[in-house]
Amino acid sequence: MTDEVKRLTTPLSEEEARDLRIGDLVSFTGVVYTLRDQGHLRAMEQEVPVDLKGALVFHCGPLVKETSDGWEVLAAGPTTSIRMEGLEREFIERFRPGALMGKGGMGQRTSEALQEFGAVYLAWTGGAAVLAAEAIRSAEVYWLDLGTPEALWVFHVEDLGPVVVAMDSHGGNLYKEVRDKVERDMPAIRAGLGI
Amino acid sequence: MDEETIRSTVAGMLDRAVKALPPDVRSALAECETDGDGIDAVQVRTIMENIRMGEEKGIPMCEDTGVPVFWLRYGKVPISLQDVVSAIKEGLVEAADRAPLRPNSVHPLTRLNHGDNFGHGLPLIHITPIESEQIEIWTLTKGHGSENMSALGMLAPAAGVKGIKEFVLETVVNAGGNPCPPLVLGVGIGGTADTAMALAKKALLRPIDTFNQDPSMAQLEADLRAGLRDIGVGPMGLGGSPTVIGVNVEHANCHPASLPVGVNVQCWADRWAKATFRMDGTVEVLGGDI
Ligand code: SF4
Image (tube, each protein chain N blue to C red):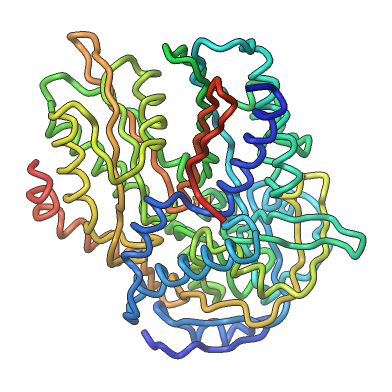
């Protein structure tokens, strides 16, 4: 892990994505697309109105307010990514995004797709929604019929981050490392609880 | 004590709840803030920075403003229960616009969202009669990243305290980073399957620096608080410390053949607020302050 924040712009090339390792801190300038449960389902069924190649796809259902100047994004933190696990491999294969961003990490199938197609999974601090919104300069929306949390939002961001690379294209998975360590420590944890 | 006061107080407490954490949770988090350079320190600093910026700008700290759950503790008062319930609903409408609150109500199968926080069964209001001449309204705006990690265990009575601890530990470890740790846990022990879960959520309404009045339950709280804090899941499941910053236990007696244990998992955005309405017209509100 390096303390230095790598500044990247979207879209990411496969080479840039493969260059990242778990523990790296990165920030992004460019475009972020939000997709959650219903957005993933629709993307697999209908034409997607944006180009997701090399894109940063954010698992997020923002808190927004419609004003006379358009949409104001008040808060935009990550949602739990594992809910999208069932579709993510096929999604990555079809759209070839450069990075997924969310919270809590994803499963083995997604990890394999990240390795195969050269992409990363980024952890944005769950609930740190005001900070995320701070980086958003403007927003557009598609698929609003899904409701504001599930719609496909296009955020134009400046210096969004730092976010942690939590799963990389080399099979690295911070969450798995943490889980394995907790498992190893279990006897001591149980003893501490008096079990 | 009139409908208008209740409506505006409920609107105000929801608005504040989503923008500022109650003092017990806020200080427990602030105590974990360090200038270290581990990922855990970065996560906690980011959370604190986010909290401060939300308070400063008057913006909800998290985009998931949760499902507002209410507890109405209804005493011997001259205003009807129906009027109080409708005042609570009107307060929610106002807060949704003012805060704003994210429209978090969808049909469970069609997933249709009508753009508000109402719908079949919502908002949820638990009603309890109380003896005193007052009304208390409590609310928790519950995020569902954490709610989704909640669990019910119908344990064998022989499993005892150790079985309860094992079940709570397992729930936290399985949840990993999904519920946005550092966590507060509400644990409901006893009753029936449904009461154990209801008690677990109600436990979250008690400040995390207090104890259950039953000494055996207070001991269990102390053990769980000490034993779960540093198990290594860490902030956001990225390792390090802390994992759990609060555990409250509520209990009820149960069937001799049964030991229900409910665990309600609460993220760091533990947004509760409470109001007491007295006969002399005074209203006391507890919770976050902005
Ligand atoms: S679990 Fe809590 S902090 Fe995390 S996104 Fe949901 S409401 Fe926000």
